[in-house]
Image (tube, rainbow, N blue to C red; front, side):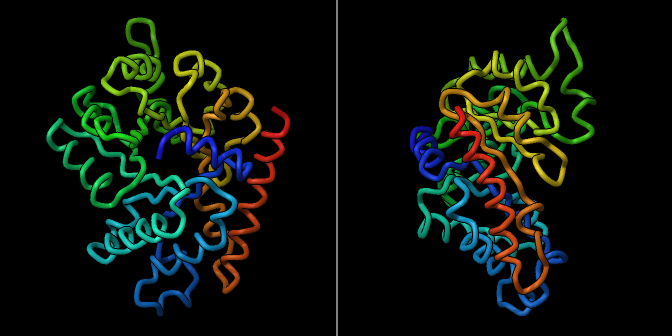
Length: 272
């Protein structure tokens, strides 16, 4: 999917909501555990309940890999279901890969060719040759970790070297890489005060923003500094939507939570 196609969907749905499909069998409704594939069954119900309210889904691959081959099969079925039934939805493999060049090429093939995701999250610690193999794929996006929402982000990301915080150096350097126009960046919602600075470095790029909802990030603060001409934001909510209820009505509860966020987004878009 191209950036232009994503922007079109944002305006059509009046939403820049991304829903994280982080499936924990200990948290899903108990009646689904009787299904042949409870992970996929849960995802399918969530997708059917929320697809009209969001523009992207983001399965965190760790929640599938933890269940071995059954989990990986459920991930494959989920992405196939999305691509076949809702091809307009943007898909993100939250895999946080990042390794030497030939290994990164194989990771890229796995998620872009075999599973046919639109994008993948990547850790940039090993530098240019670990990220460019992902950027080589046409109409696919690489979403690079820049400034994350976790407590430990301050251990390295805002430390200064040669007078500049590390996250700023990561952003600036990444713009020099091959096909850098295919880059997006992860910026945590709990770091809303940094968005103004980040937009001076990457004014046109899309930012994937986790941390709204369960982690305490504020949507209005993020949008105040983060929105650009193409909107440029994908606001992710996972637990706050998919685990809104553990009862039989979990799909309706997910719809209600997703709609509340979408309506806030529609209001923000209407006021631009």
